[in-house]
Image (cartoon, rainbow, N blue to C red; front, side, top):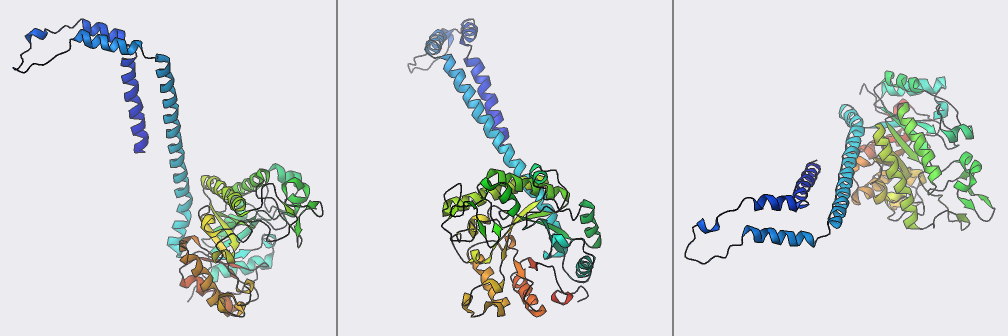
Length: 428
C-alpha cells in the first residue's frame, strides 16, 4: 500500500513541476519584473562571477526553444499510463491476497477448534440412500471424523446438483442428489468441513459430445478410451471453463473447498494419443498448473479453497510420470494436495516391502516422508488413505501413519462403507 501512495505522490510532484516548466514565458515575465540590485550585494575579497537574472532567463528560453514539447507531453502520457497500470496491478495483488486470506479463515478457524481435518468420502450417488445416510451420521456423531468429501461431478460426467451452466443443459447430464438445504442439514448433525469432489479430465459424456475437446485416438479415429475411461484434453479452454464454472457453482452451493480429481493426462504410453499441444513434460506441467492457478484464484474470490487428488507415486517420482503431475509445481498452485497413498497400489518391492499392502503404516510413512524430504510443507499434504481391502486395524494404521506426521487425512472407499471401529470414538 505504501508503494501505491508513493507512486501517486510522485506523479503529483512531477505534474506540478511540469506545469511550471511547460509555461516558461509567464515565468520569464515575472522574473524580469523583479530586478535585484546586484551592485548592492556585499562580497568578500574573493572574485565571484554572478550570472544576471536576465542571463538565467535567456538560458531557460534557449533550452525551451530547442525542446520539443510534444515529445515531453507524449513521454509524460506514457509514463502516466505505466505508473497507473502498475498501481492497478498492485491493487489486484492486494485483492487476491485478501481473497486468499478470507478463503483460508474458515479452515483455520475449523482446525483451531477441531485440531485436524479427519474425513471420509461419501459417494454422491448414495447421498439420499437412507441406510447410507444413517451409517454416515453414526460415524459423525460417534467418532472424531469431522469432514465429508462428496461428489459434485462424477467419473461418469454427471453433475449432482441443479445448475444452469450451458454445457450441462446441452449434455443433459444433471443427476440431482442434493441442494444447499441438504448440505446445511449435514452441518446440523455436527460442525463439519465440506469438500466437493469434482472429476476434471476424465469425462465420457463430454468427450463423446465434444470430440474435438478430447484426447484423440489416431488409430481408431475417435476419442481415446482407456479401459472405458475417456480423457479430455487438458489444454482445451472450453473444457477448463466448463470445469471452473462447475467449481464456482459448487462453492456457492455451500462447500468449503473444491477438490479436483483426475487432474491429469491419461496414464498411458499409447503412441496413438493426440493432443492439441505437444505431449511433453513442459506442456503437460504447464497446462495442468496454469489451469489450477486460474481455478484457485477464482475460487478464492468465492471464498472456497482448492485441493487436488494426485497419484501417490509423485511424492517419490521427481518428474511428472507422463501425466502432468509434478510435486514441486502442483503444490504451488493449490491449497492442498491429496496423494492417494494406497498401499495396495504400490508395486511389489516398493520401499523395501515385497507386499506393500501388508505394511500400511510403513509404506504410507515412507511415501509421505519422501514429500517432506523434498521440502513440501506438511500442512499442504492431506493424503487419501485406503479404506478398502483393509481390516479395521489396517485402516487405523493408515490413519496413525498420517497422524504421526501431524498431517490431516481422508479415507477413500468407493461405496462409502465404513465401520465405527476404524475411527477413534469420541468417548475415548
